[in-house]
Length: 171
Image (tube, rainbow, N blue to C red; front, side, top):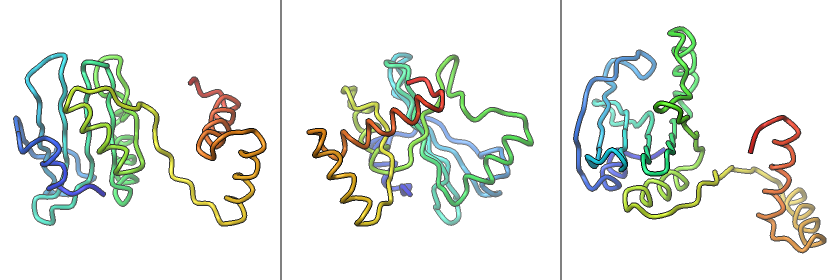
């Protein structure tokens, strides 16, 4: 999971707000810091962490220019957060107005998006999905991709899109 130091480097150590995190799921020492560039069409970043242990529970990046929001939640604490949101009857999806969070699973994916958002540059809006494949599965997929004249990544993306479409997910 991303460290507090890494988050601070992404925001160039610019803190605009901070407060105790008011939910119980991250414990009594949880605190939230925000870094906003002051532009309604700009960006902001949030980190929720433990003031005693410095464990980061969650990081968020908000791109108001493109109306996108990304979130990376520490997997060790995700279930507690989900339970509390259910108990409070609060949806975790909505970032603001009509914009929902895109949950990320890889630190590097958040870093790439956050750094581009901070620099006001275009970025890849696709989400990195970790796949744990054994050698046989990997080799089989590589052969199938080769038969279709695709890279392994292109082939896996195609498979994932087809499966999501079958599940009724709007892409």
